[in-house]
Length: 231
Image 1 (cartoon, helix red, strand yellow):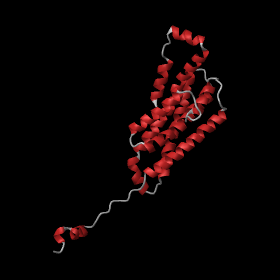
Image 2 (cartoon, rainbow, N blue to C red):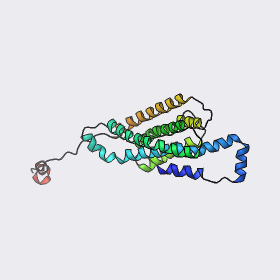
Image 3 (cartoon, helix red, strand yellow):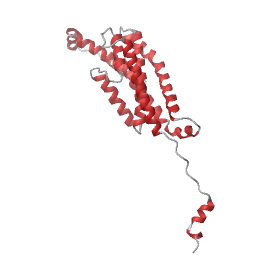
Image 4 (spheres, helix red, strand yellow):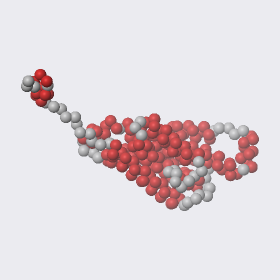
């Protein structure tokens, strides 16, 4: 969780040379894009941390799945419980990160907090789906880096999972958005629901109750041995 905070302050406190400062002053569009990039490292970077946390929670619990299934739990119940745990973490870190970024930038706090919260919600489902697809943590982390990295570096597109969070992030800085705040929130929630449904389906097929190994009685083994067979 501290990693996006480190990235944010690295870019926020990085000194700007006079030539770059003059260039940004002459190009307001470029200056606004540079400012949004700095804010995105902290806001959307929280989503990356949440996605990785969901990945490790899911994969790290695989060893206990068989015992929990034998106890009567369903795979979907196990997955939803872990997702709620990660969403609880999102609810804790969202106001903290929003307050830190707001202390450095003149942004609308509610829009900023909503952007960070939506980023965490969608990212949690990305982590769940990655854990259901890949077998180990390293592959999952690389997959999440690719998804979140494309979102942070490419131009915003509606098909991107964090597009709604990016729209609210732009509105927090007073920039015009491509959709209303309500549409951006609805888009993010629907996207998260679809990812979660796919993750549950894949996880349920992967995590199944394995039948216990059949233990044969000693008498049966002795009867089947060559020494006991009639000649």
